[in-house]
Length: 332
Image (cartoon, rainbow, N blue to C red; front, side, top):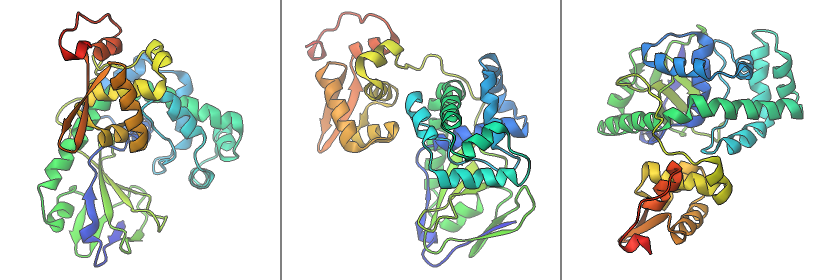
């Protein structure tokens, strides 16, 4: 049983995440494979994985047990950035996690190499994670974002914290000041929020019962991962525009990803673009300016807010085709 104790200020610091945590989605999706859970909503996703499966991907299974889920696999918009970010994950949480895995079973040679900081093992970890992202997460990114955003707005309409916590999940019990639910390993653990509040993170690949993360660091806000409502099966969106390797070579990885983000989510503000790319607002503004000056996007201003949308040329380049003849102001 996990018990989360709320202090005087914690209820006022509850918030529901507006966007998915793609790093946790990736990690939880691997856990779904490891645990062998069969959910008909994910059958198409599993079939897609089976068709494009790389045997090396099974190395990720070495980092899991039924109850241990790594928090150091890092997803970025560009798989190349995912590879480097995961390979350079902080040592302390990585070793602590693998120490936990080693307490349940013998570590594989790959897992031992990762835990020991072996360069080749860490580079391989980044490469395998990036490869898995390209066929397990990226084709479903838009649908994942829609599901989590819808869950956010549904929860936001509930104004009372007691109602939010009491309606999270059938397995969750809320009796002030304690939120509790059973753990899969039947252990007992208490978490005191101590004024940090709680982030409620809806997850598409979340397990059937909630999971708490990032609670051991007193400087971090704990995160309660819970399964979001999924209306239907996950479907790969082959029609989603993605930057080709040629376009990436032409524009650079981040700028090509910026063009893709604007085409997928636009019109979007500079702040929203920064969030999509996991970069600073200043960097997002710089990339958006270059794209606009190149005729690939257009800036629209409403009051103090600037939004970005793709031009026909930008959409055509993403789709890998020649643009039709453009007329009007955007042709200049």
